[in-house]
Length: 553
Image 1 (cartoon, one colour):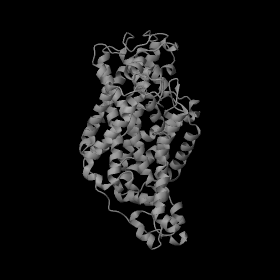
Image 2 (spheres, rainbow, N blue to C red; image 1 turned 135 degrees about the horizontal axis):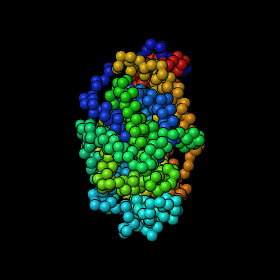
Image 3 (cartoon, one colour; image 1 turned 45 degrees about the vertical axis):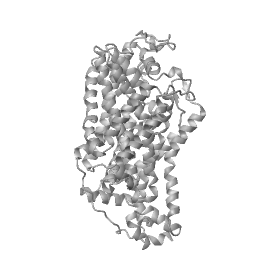
Image 4 (spheres, rainbow, N blue to C red; image 1 turned 60 degrees about the horizontal axis):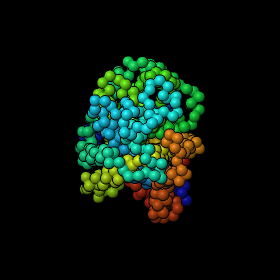
């Protein structure tokens, strides 16, 4: 029986501690840059901070520490690391697919930023007036009651939707049209930059990170110093720091916040340098960066609220509208607006390329570690990945591309990333074992993780993540862009995209279980035992079949 294959508590096989990789400072910068400097565009508001900080304490920081330790000790990619518990290897493929899906539309944001940057090199910014060829009769550059008028639109809004996207030439997601050559060119430039930043792996991306990880902080500081001098900026910052307790009852606020946190702290990080202190410092810097960027955003939103004489919530918008509509309109009213616009969109470019590099690296590293023959052809494989991403991204630069972008943004990394982190936490804390994992960490840094970390890993974080996954399913809202609601088939397509990454967990578990030899108990023992300990299974010693394994913390 399974019970008879129980292994004594003391049995185990320790691996030789891996050496610290060269370029440690570059690796630390990589940890900061993965997603931490990205704006929390869709959740950043007065109700964001409380659940954000709560999630960081009970799940974000513990899971980030887990990721660092797991990656450093095993020195494998997202899939290969699951040699510690083979049946959970599907989690690695889930992570790789999520990163790939995000790359399909994230690169488009960088292309938009590049387009805006080119447009900023002019004496007068093109989104100031309504006398352009793309403007409609509804365009008005009046400053006062414009936002209260349903039938009027701002020049900045029309520049983004009509001048850049040409959204008015599409009737919906079923009427996309051809890719716009201007945006296609910008997207091609982005892909070329990404390729030459990644083709040699850490040799090149480690150097690029010195610019991409530090530049946003400089520009954010400059923009904040300018923003707080504007009229109404203090009111915006007050709104940012005040907590709307009624909004805390909104499940969507928590779901969006926790999804952003998972992305922000860089969950599923690969090949990172472990240090207990670095885990604390890095996750804290990532969180403080998002917190700091909120001051910049709300100082300008407060200024726009004061300028239009409307409530702040009438100015704030979700998704790309904040960066490509509200911010350009605010910057256009400043003295030397072209200079400020150039600075701002250079910052967006560094932010975007920075984050895109992290996502691409996770895909490339995960697959090259899993399929060893790709190591010899890393440059060619990197080229294949970026070209494939470029071809799919072309759909998002068509006339109706914003609809595809919205669909991908809604489904690619929402519930699926929470699900992936949940399964990973269960696999490491329960099946591999918190005690064994703590032994691995002690072997590397000389001390075991404290009780706080072990309790979060085994009980608090998995329970909370399970709750959030259930809530995200139960409170699902169909995607929409402005007043456009997606047809049912588009929503179903989005769910297929989301499920396609999550389903890798049960599919691989089923495949692994069926491919193993022996009886049911033999298959189960091999599936949940580290590959380096399969010889113990043959002797009938399986520590996962003991009660002590499941109870110890």
